[in-house]
Image (tube, rainbow, N blue to C red; front, side, top):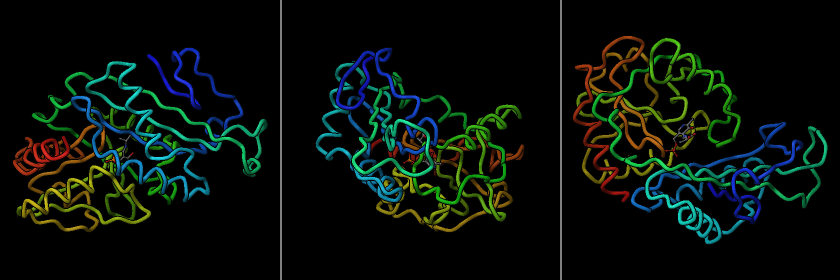
Length: 280
Ligand code: PDD
């Protein structure tokens, strides 16, 4: 695989980053994941906009212009012959040459890394027809989840706990309400209404969420943006989640209880189709 590192396209084995990089020792960096279907980047402007916002919330500038980001994405897809899959991008505060809590001096170059992951048949995920099983765990992440930082240890631990319990993913709960999934935004459907947590610093402002809610509103579907509980999810007609890498996937079980009929429901199924149609 050919990857991108600080202006160069390199074989992955030759792409090396310093052990002092702030991303490595401090998780001081942000990232984005963009899906590619039939060679097209999905929701790309939204991902770039959020990248700039995440960087700015951490006191960093955006090292590249939107045109430059697009050119790198296109080039990597071409070099790696990727039609379906994803592109990961990461920007860290760079290499100060030593470990220090204080930021490196002004002008220290940021570290920019991008790589592709080919996933042939990405849009035909069989889980869309069977659904996911989730467990709930306490949300023990830091309080600025609106910034897409590379500190993913807690979501990773939560995912492993889900697997240990024979489930597919975990929904994170704070003060009695679901915030989001380990790496996705969460929804329930009750009496035809789509319910999802409102935007704040408590959750990542999902790009897929934003697009999907727009398409759903255009299709005259009812939407309510408010927090919901695990008990409500268990009593709901349907549940589902969204992310750039999974699009829309139904959730059929929460903490061992079937949601609705225990099979993917019509609203989640329709929303998945709607998202794929509209964003392609
Ligand atoms: N995760 N919430 C969290 C905590 C996330 O990590 C993600 C994305 C989302 C969904 O956001 P979007 O629709 O913009 O992908 C919500 C990515 C896909 C990942 O870490 O792989």
